Length: 238
Image (tube, rainbow, N blue to C red; front, side, top):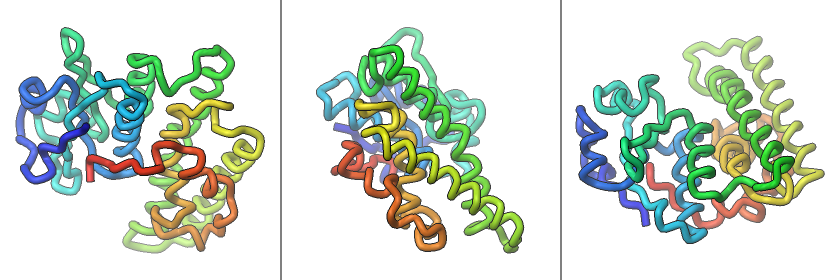
């Protein structure tokens, strides 16, 4: 079971790595953002599959307060972005940053959430890296100009709205022919896509489901029915 020592106590400004050595075999540093929850979902899935070695401590990184720039966090991720992982089950401890890298690291370490057959494995990785490349256009493009930009620029909103719809259509067509993104097996590709696109079409991201007219997409219907992580998953970095 995951614990959340930072849910009520502020993260130390320095040496998060030292804190992790005292607290747990594995520390996940993040926040409940679409990128941030990917590692948590993967860890919870591994625990649900019976991998007790996947137990971890969840440390909240308050990016709105600049905690990602603390000297301790920068030791784990020099790019000052969430999520990040410090794995103490090996010596020396391994730091892992970038959400796709964390997902792949966990899948390979535990031999789960990634198909063994070469073709299915490759297809799952195709979609994992598709998400890594596509999400900046959804978040930094559509999300920024539709929700966060202090001024509304029609050209930018229209440009990234069309791109968001195009990406959803890509997923829709894939899910029309395949149970999961990588094929017949649930994988880290599905974990990577769900917090962004699954939540987008359910209206939980940017409040844009109606604007994007995506209520009938397969990305929406694929949620709890197809993705175990979406059944009862309680995200630790909340």
